[in-house]
Length: 252
Image (cartoon, rainbow, N blue to C red; front, top):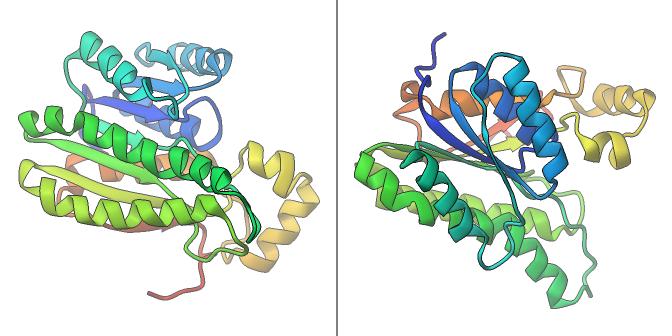
């Protein structure tokens, strides 16, 4: 299927590894002009080199920490100075933040700074551009709605769902859609380095919890994002799409 994305301009945050990298790779194969952002510049440079080696357009590399006060304005300047527009924003930078009931406020603030506020601030910074274009796609990579413990990151991601749904009421008339993708267990640094470090761990977990029987790859998220970012998904907005091999147990 042709997703009709060739020539579109997309910003992917958290693009240095894992899911973000997979999203960038899929969008690049669709002919998208990418801006990739993350804290680790050397990994971003590696992503850029691999994309070019595969025949894609050279991405604009913007290394920065999205939780810093000046970060959103800085990346907005880079994008508009180079391309003058932004068609697709993929909010991906973030991660879980397990906490205890007596965790200090600072731990909660840190989780919300990255997992909610950075998403909201980036989207709102580029909305005027998308509104002038009468077209735009915002895709938020969020998290599980079935938390296994107290996790400030999950709470922040739930706030993203509520914010995104409300935002659709404001921007849909401009041809802008806002959707969220909830990954299940996807091969990433978090999986291989901490949660399921061995092949045996991953096989055992998948057999017990994932109906399709295996851990997903970052590109599985990338394909869902590419569809939601495409003109073909024009009538889908305010939705939460689970890409998890059936791991989520709720039917609604």
